[in-house]
Amino acid sequence: MSRATTEPTIPTERDAVLARAASRVLDACKSDDRGLTMQIVEAGKECTALELPPAAARLLRTLLQEMAAGRAVTVVPLDAEITTGEAADLLHVSRPFVVGLIDKGELAARMVGAHRRLRLDDVLKYKRDSKVRARVALKEMVEISQELGLE
Image (cartoon, one colour):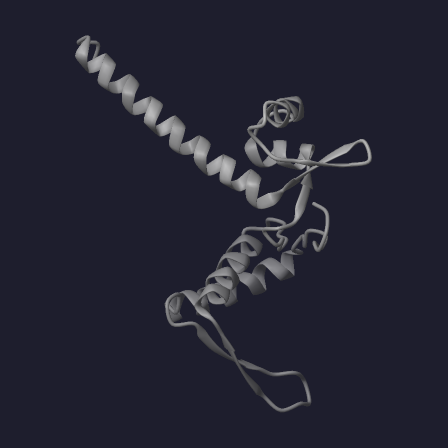
Protein backbone atom coordinates (compact mmCIF):
# COMPACT_ATOMS: atom_id res chain seq x y z
CA MET A 1 0.00 0.00 0.00
CA SER A 2 1.21 3.43 -0.82
CA ARG A 3 1.29 6.86 0.82
CA ALA A 4 1.70 7.23 4.58
CA THR A 5 2.10 3.54 5.25
CA THR A 6 4.77 1.45 6.81
CA GLU A 7 5.97 -1.93 5.75
CA PRO A 8 4.09 -4.76 7.46
CA THR A 9 5.50 -5.74 10.82
CA ILE A 10 6.12 -9.47 10.81
CA PRO A 11 6.31 -10.71 14.40
CA THR A 12 9.16 -12.93 15.49
CA GLU A 13 8.39 -15.84 17.82
CA ARG A 14 9.48 -13.67 20.75
CA ASP A 15 7.23 -10.84 19.53
CA ALA A 16 4.31 -13.29 19.36
CA VAL A 17 4.95 -14.50 22.92
CA LEU A 18 5.12 -10.93 24.25
CA ALA A 19 2.01 -9.98 22.28
CA ARG A 20 0.09 -12.94 23.77
CA ALA A 21 1.04 -11.87 27.28
CA ALA A 22 0.12 -8.23 26.64
CA SER A 23 -3.13 -9.26 24.95
CA ARG A 24 -4.14 -11.32 27.99
CA VAL A 25 -3.55 -8.31 30.25
CA LEU A 26 -5.63 -6.03 28.00
CA ASP A 27 -8.41 -8.63 27.76
CA ALA A 28 -8.59 -8.70 31.55
CA CYS A 29 -9.09 -4.91 31.60
CA LYS A 30 -12.18 -4.87 29.35
CA SER A 31 -11.56 -1.22 28.59
CA ASP A 32 -13.02 -0.94 25.09
CA ASP A 33 -15.50 1.80 25.93
CA ARG A 34 -13.48 3.63 28.61
CA GLY A 35 -10.04 3.86 27.08
CA LEU A 36 -6.87 2.87 28.87
CA THR A 37 -4.31 4.50 31.07
CA MET A 38 -0.95 2.80 30.70
CA GLN A 39 2.34 3.20 32.53
CA ILE A 40 5.29 3.58 30.20
CA VAL A 41 8.59 2.51 31.72
CA GLU A 42 11.92 2.75 29.98
CA ALA A 43 14.99 1.22 31.61
CA GLY A 44 16.61 3.76 33.91
CA LYS A 45 13.89 6.38 33.45
CA GLU A 46 10.80 7.40 35.37
CA CYS A 47 7.33 6.08 34.57
CA THR A 48 5.00 8.12 32.47
CA ALA A 49 1.23 7.70 32.49
CA LEU A 50 -0.29 7.58 29.03
CA GLU A 51 -4.03 7.79 28.43
CA LEU A 52 -5.36 6.08 25.30
CA PRO A 53 -8.79 6.85 23.89
CA PRO A 54 -11.24 3.91 23.55
CA ALA A 55 -10.66 3.57 19.79
CA ALA A 56 -6.90 3.33 20.28
CA ALA A 57 -7.39 0.75 23.05
CA ARG A 58 -9.49 -1.39 20.66
CA LEU A 59 -6.87 -1.05 17.92
CA LEU A 60 -4.08 -1.97 20.32
CA ARG A 61 -6.00 -5.06 21.45
CA THR A 62 -6.57 -6.13 17.82
CA LEU A 63 -2.94 -5.43 16.89
CA LEU A 64 -1.67 -7.58 19.77
CA GLN A 65 -4.09 -10.42 18.97
CA GLU A 66 -2.90 -10.51 15.36
CA MET A 67 0.77 -10.41 16.38
CA ALA A 68 0.14 -13.11 19.00
CA ALA A 69 -1.19 -15.31 16.20
CA GLY A 70 2.02 -14.66 14.23
CA ARG A 71 0.32 -12.59 11.53
CA ALA A 72 1.94 -9.56 9.91
CA VAL A 73 0.27 -6.23 10.72
CA THR A 74 0.35 -2.71 9.42
CA VAL A 75 -1.55 0.49 10.11
CA VAL A 76 -2.90 2.37 7.11
CA PRO A 77 -4.94 5.58 7.15
CA LEU A 78 -8.32 5.27 5.42
CA ASP A 79 -7.46 8.00 2.94
CA ALA A 80 -4.41 6.06 1.76
CA GLU A 81 -4.31 5.18 -1.91
CA ILE A 82 -3.81 1.61 -3.02
CA THR A 83 -3.07 -0.10 -6.31
CA THR A 84 -5.53 -2.19 -8.28
CA GLY A 85 -3.64 -5.30 -7.18
CA GLU A 86 -3.94 -4.35 -3.51
CA ALA A 87 -7.65 -3.59 -4.01
CA ALA A 88 -8.08 -7.00 -5.65
CA ASP A 89 -6.42 -8.67 -2.65
CA LEU A 90 -8.74 -6.83 -0.24
CA LEU A 91 -11.83 -7.76 -2.25
CA HIS A 92 -10.68 -11.35 -2.95
CA VAL A 93 -11.09 -10.85 -6.69
CA SER A 94 -8.73 -10.57 -9.65
CA ARG A 95 -6.97 -7.37 -10.61
CA PRO A 96 -8.73 -7.31 -14.04
CA PHE A 97 -12.08 -7.51 -12.18
CA VAL A 98 -11.12 -4.40 -10.18
CA VAL A 99 -10.11 -2.62 -13.40
CA GLY A 100 -13.54 -3.54 -14.81
CA LEU A 101 -15.25 -2.05 -11.75
CA ILE A 102 -13.27 1.16 -12.31
CA ASP A 103 -14.11 1.23 -16.03
CA LYS A 104 -17.84 0.76 -15.23
CA GLY A 105 -17.70 3.57 -12.67
CA GLU A 106 -18.46 1.30 -9.70
CA LEU A 107 -15.13 2.15 -8.06
CA ALA A 108 -13.48 5.55 -8.22
CA ALA A 109 -9.83 5.76 -9.17
CA ARG A 110 -7.34 8.31 -10.35
CA MET A 111 -4.50 7.88 -12.77
CA VAL A 112 -0.91 8.26 -11.67
CA GLY A 113 1.00 8.05 -14.90
CA ALA A 114 -0.26 4.84 -16.48
CA HIS A 115 -1.39 3.36 -13.15
CA ARG A 116 -4.71 3.52 -11.35
CA ARG A 117 -4.90 4.41 -7.65
CA LEU A 118 -7.93 3.87 -5.45
CA ARG A 119 -8.72 5.32 -2.05
CA LEU A 120 -8.70 2.62 0.59
CA ASP A 121 -11.93 3.89 2.15
CA ASP A 122 -13.69 3.64 -1.26
CA VAL A 123 -12.57 0.02 -1.63
CA LEU A 124 -13.68 -0.86 1.91
CA LYS A 125 -17.06 0.82 1.31
CA TYR A 126 -17.48 -1.20 -1.90
CA LYS A 127 -16.65 -4.37 0.05
CA ARG A 128 -19.24 -3.56 2.75
CA ASP A 129 -21.86 -2.71 0.15
CA SER A 130 -21.14 -5.95 -1.74
CA LYS A 131 -21.71 -7.97 1.43
CA VAL A 132 -25.05 -6.23 1.98
CA ARG A 133 -26.09 -6.91 -1.63
CA ALA A 134 -25.07 -10.56 -1.26
CA ARG A 135 -27.13 -10.95 1.94
CA VAL A 136 -30.18 -9.39 0.29
CA ALA A 137 -29.81 -11.67 -2.76
CA LEU A 138 -29.44 -14.75 -0.54
CA LYS A 139 -32.54 -13.79 1.44
CA GLU A 140 -34.49 -13.39 -1.80
CA MET A 141 -33.28 -16.80 -3.02
CA VAL A 142 -34.38 -18.44 0.22
CA GLU A 143 -37.81 -16.78 -0.04
CA ILE A 144 -38.25 -17.93 -3.65
CA SER A 145 -37.14 -21.45 -2.77
CA GLN A 146 -39.67 -21.53 0.11
CA GLU A 147 -42.44 -20.23 -2.16
CA LEU A 148 -41.66 -23.00 -4.66
CA GLY A 149 -41.53 -25.59 -1.89
CA LEU A 150 -37.87 -26.41 -2.56
CA GLU A 151 -36.83 -26.21 1.08
